[in-house]
Length: 328
Ligand code: SF4
Picture (cartoon, rainbow, N blue to C red):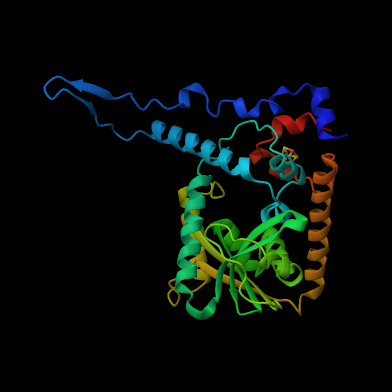
């Protein structure tokens, strides 16, 4: 059933008036005049000082997260690398078609803090890598498949690098297994695939802010590098501060950190030739999901709940839960 028919059947009115929907509840709207007082001596309106309040701070973060998410979602018209590698297929369709959300606010507010830390980590590594990286932030736009992505770094025409920041428990797993997280692996293989199969189209596009188009005329990616940076105690993955500290101490010991002050950075290199079966398997997964996304967008349909790319583990953070529940 098409989305339009379904939405009419459900009488889900919000779809039509989403533009008029207030962004924020009344208790979070701007009251910037509050706190101004008239000073009879000077005849001026003065702003009195305020002590930092965690409650006000949280409300600000909530308000700003809603504004940023709305701005971002309003202009999302392409399939992202994250959408293919990590997201639930239905949420990608809902997002691109600008379907009504439950709320624009982040479900877990510290995610904004993590994003800022992640950007700082990228900036630091890219600026300190010297000649190990020959290109940073290369835009990969493939309009014929509605795709827009941006890879982190390249070295020459044969090494592709993606930087990922993560919490201690994830980092510990990566160190002990020597393997990247599955979604991260899919993402780098998708970039490799784009560089090797859609380069001509990509080079015709305008880069997005902060990125550039790939510089070379040919790429043959032989190594994929996942650069993991463990940078925080923010994640709820550590049940307590003492647990997080224990994680950090054990990891430092394991990595003999006396000799390595950057024990919290680890590179996992994948030799494409040696891992060719796995890489081909991933490319098959990527193309299957990518094609299915485009077919759904072309036909204005939503994949059913039993679709293989529906990801129930993502429902907690999903902004489309209310709508999704009404669609079989
Ligand atoms: S609520 Fe769950 S199943 Fe529905 S779109 Fe979101 S992540 Fe997918």
